[in-house]
Amino acid sequence: MEPGISTESEVRGILEELGLYQHCEGYDTEEEGGSRGLVCGGFLVGYRPASDIVEVIGFSLPSEATVDDVIAVYGAPQSALAGREGIPEFPKTGMSLFYPHIRVTLGLPPQEGTVYKVVPSTLVSGVTYHDPESYARVWGPELPRWEGYGEYPQTDFFHSAD
Image (cartoon, rainbow, N blue to C red):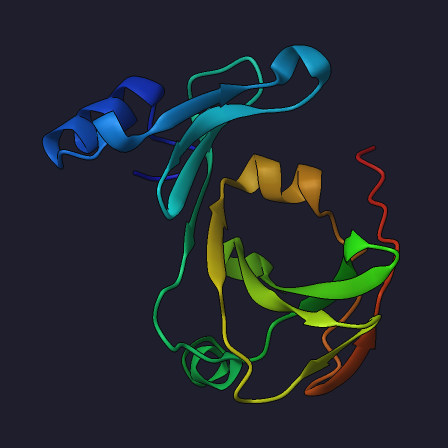
């Protein structure tokens, strides 16, 4: 499966061949301005709006991959975004690292509080691959820059998809 190229029917064929399709659940919130795709255990496939072309493929990482491991292979991320998670009474902060040259977003597990501390041993909990169109549309060039290991306060990121 490849974002921007694979079709919904190709995805179904691959998943059926692997014996995984029966474990997938479809979702469709396009009428409400959302998205459409499949959730299959630890991974998801999303389709472009009003299309059958794969827009995004994401999966959870059960391994012990760390931020330092990823940087050793791909270099430092271009951007880092700390955002609110949870409820105000029990604040948590999530973190995403961005590699636009390969259209990859890494998700890091949430931490307690309103600041995210990234250290070399911080685990990577998920990976998302985007097609070129969706990466630019969803994230754009305005993402906060990666400033190296350290603390990142929560930010209210808003990308104008102009």
